[in-house]
Length: 199
Image (cartoon, rainbow, N blue to C red; front, side, top):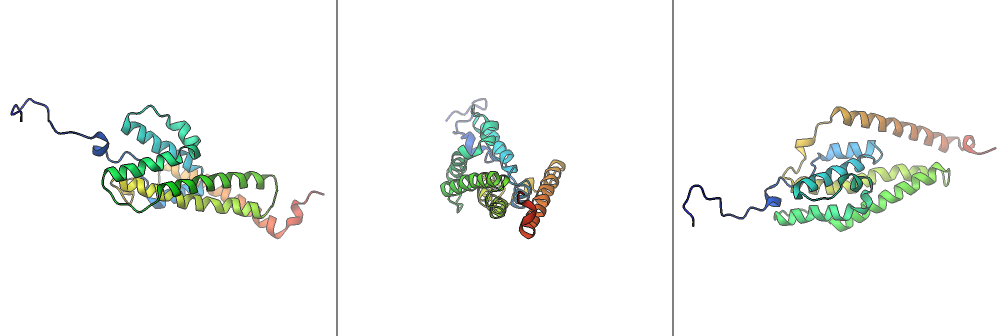
């Protein structure tokens, strides 16, 4: 062993291990509120932030913005990365990243298809109801990944990002208005369907 006080340390330092987990931490309640009230639009931002964190942690050349916009193509790789970090850190966390990713992709695609179909008044009001109902289901399965990311980052309850910002409130209020208009319109479709029949 080198006794010199000027010698660099000889221990191996794993940058991935010494980082705080490398993920975007969000409290579960905040995650659900933002995802549901923005009708799932928050997930685009969420995936972008997760990939940006991975890029910074690994100093990689990935492009977080396209991975956020087209998140269905990168869901499996992100969830696998989170699971790998948990494994590398020796953290036991009960979740199934592959199954969860598949469900998130399927529900996101289904929600999009149902939304397009309901916009064309096909199968209404069933497609309208199903389109809206898919949003909280999508939020629930995506939350499983957020919880895993929180655990991997050493903040299981997401307390470091539990407070709603001004921007959060703006998006939730706008989303809440869309929810209100959607439910208002759905009420009339169900109770007065004759108003929506072409003469």
